[in-house]
Length: 535
Image (cartoon, rainbow, N blue to C red; front, side, top):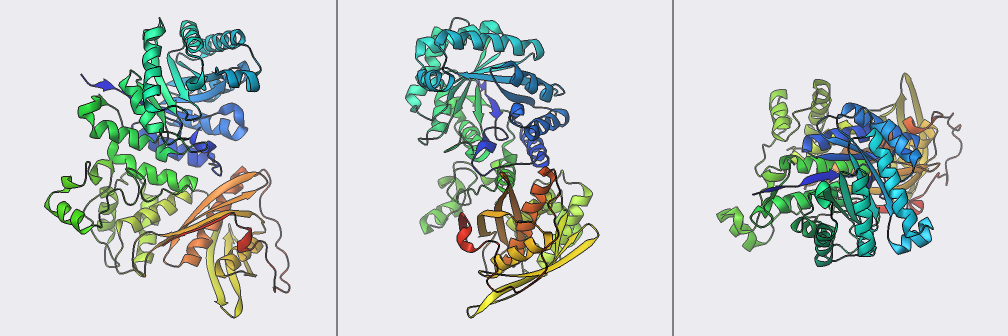
């Protein structure tokens, strides 16, 4: 009989802790809605006590998203638990997830507590959380490096105190699959009341074994897996949701389990997370990488033409990709475009979003002979990120060459005002960024710049992702165009737009009066932390 495995997604909490990621409330809500559509059982929406912004993000998700349990993380103290409950109390199915470290190294150097004190605190706080929330999850942080007998003692105590879910984290990705599977088996055999709680696991990927450890835990009795889309998370990341789910589905003959995930929505969810976080998916990434269903070898191609099962153990359709493509061009009408959107899984777009996407499509079709699925996906992604669009690029012009200093002139619209400025820079992109800064009146630091081609050919649509920071705030921006300078400008403005709602004072200050521009540069290419190009 097939066992039901519950998928606990922590993309919005542990995933956002990846260095360089900072999502605003609107982005978090859109991601949570998509995770619910994907069929995720539990969405860990954030850590409400961490900041006012995180609290508001969790609360908006709890009020809006239905169908999934909404969890909030809290340290084992009353202030965190109060804040967590305040944030998720409106959820259809709320869960408080509280934790305290149990390994000797954490207790000695981080908590400075004795074992008896840790047990007492864990029991007290699980009992306290249970007064508010009918569903409490407890995690003994760094369980993988905790002395087994003490771990059993803590687990038994918190279950008696009211914990409905006990999560076993490999916090630093230390264990090998055989060891971790054995740990779960030993917990089942040595904790007398374990039948009263569901065993969960949360594996990190420091040694590249997070997915393998999670699957080993399932084989040994774990019924919930904590994971993130694309495996994002602190340090080397977490177990990847898409890899776990597709391993269980593809090898159901071996694992004999099922999940509630609608796998046909995996690819779209993965792309959405990649763009929102600015974290690029490597081409050879399992399941969702660009090469996951690509075949270049002549032998492979011959086998695929004869029978796709020769080299594919799962189908592209099973994760939301299409093998065949309906090519669209400038003569295609609205009906064909809307049918294409539905075929690609974008059936939940409202009419305004469809209209904006169609206008962008027609503009692109005038520049390209054929518009491919990946082009359309890039356009939809760009439109979905422009929910807050205070500043908009209306015009730009560059002058650049090997023997002249690159200059750029931009015209930026802000509500009913229009600002036009010019600047120099180390190349056309740098000059354009400088001109945008002068027009908007903001100085930010460019932390990362990534450009890649959505499709092949000289007329390929260029996708640009930028990451910027200002006063300890970070933001990511995204832009697409067949002109990489225009795509770069759109991405830069998108990043500034995404940052502005989080600033108490408006970004804009009066731009400096234009003076001599020679050698003037707010930042040069050498100041950027990470330039990446993928053509």
